[in-house]
Amino acid sequence: MIKNLIKKFTPEFLISGYHLKLAFLGAFLYGFPSRKLSVVGITGTSGKSTVVDLTTRILEETGHRVASISSIRFKIGEREWENTLKMTMPGRLKLQKFLREAVKAGCKCAVLEVTSEGIKQYRHKFIKFNTAVFNNLSPEHIESHGGFENYKDCKGKLFRATKNTHIINLDDDNAEYFLQFPAAKKLGFSTKKDRERVSENGSLSAKIIAKDITDELSWIKFRVENIDFKLPLLGKFNVYNALAAICVGLSQGVSLETCKKALEKAKGIPGRMEIVIKEPFKVIVDYAITPVALEKVYQTATRQLVNPSTNQLICVLGACGGGRDKWKRPVFGEIASEYCGEIIITNEDPYDENPMDIINQVAEGAGGKAQKILDRREAIKTALQLAKPKDVVITTGKGCEPWMCVAGGKKIPWDDRKIVKEEFQKLYGKVSNS
Image 1 (tube, one colour):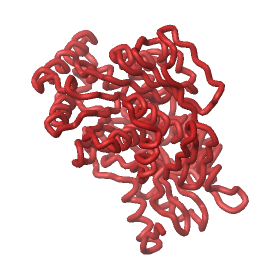
Image 2: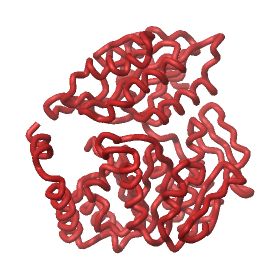
Image 3: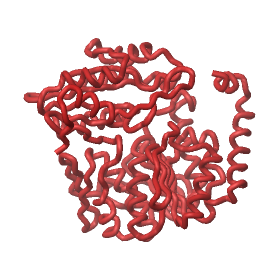
Image 4: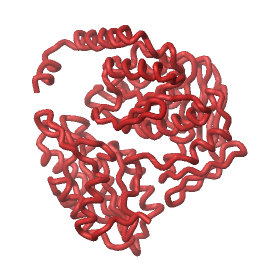
């Protein structure tokens, strides 16, 4: 509460100056560690954590020690630990300390998830990025940034700061904006062989195209040049995440064959289209905190797992609080009403906002079709009770996050995956994932 009051009454230039000086202090104290690393920054709205994970696997396949940070985990060489900060991109001192530890551990590369909020607070400053990756862009953090264009410009600052290699999703509507920034080398990726994008600051050094894409239960398959890839990931959107990682590998001199070998070892990404119960019905946990991401999750489930004549999609969702992006709450409800047979709207991360107000705003979009259950555990339990054999239950908004953030800065230990398994076991006995 005090922190919010300070922000409210402190001029923006003073806040910006504070963040910038703290960024310099962190880099100075830890000896500007990024200068001894090849740093890859992954930005975009959705899929950043998945791209970080896949990129790390590719770079490790070459025998190098790699460090990485995502909303899911921290990793330095063989050592990894959960990101419990409830913050995708750590603060400036923590970030620079991490990079210093990576250097000491003998890492040659660092792969960082770079957020617009992090850029806004200069957390990317005084980090020497070798490669910037743009995956996709859709409305998010609009109220915080004061509009979509400001949000996009924040992402663009990573590309302004990165002079060596730019990697861009050519199929995204905002690709040309990111192509405008100068770089020594530019790679593009696409699923459309005739996709062309114009760059005022140099042509593409390479364009990677995925062909023969198939989206099967628990697998995606595609071909790049003459190499066939088969990844144990659910959802066609993960093709783009894989292509982004492949482009990073190619930009670092890694062969397609090595990329294939690395990616096919992937075991799925925690809390991202993760199937936590397989029988007698499926339960999937996903992060999906934007309308675009939520719709892709539901589309994947209805295309692969749901037959309207025999089974249904049961959805548990909410929306983050604290005054964050209130515009998308009824949109979530509208999307759920289009795809879900049963809708349960529940608590997510209310922070200091009244959680029932948030739930009611999501429910408005569902047109009276939804149940409203404040207690998230109870909501998950209800979804499991509603499910019949072959149905699909999806809980979104939390993924593998370890906390639920409520009023007064309090954090409640939480993991949707764990709660699902606990409630399933109470209702039906032993969890079966065979």
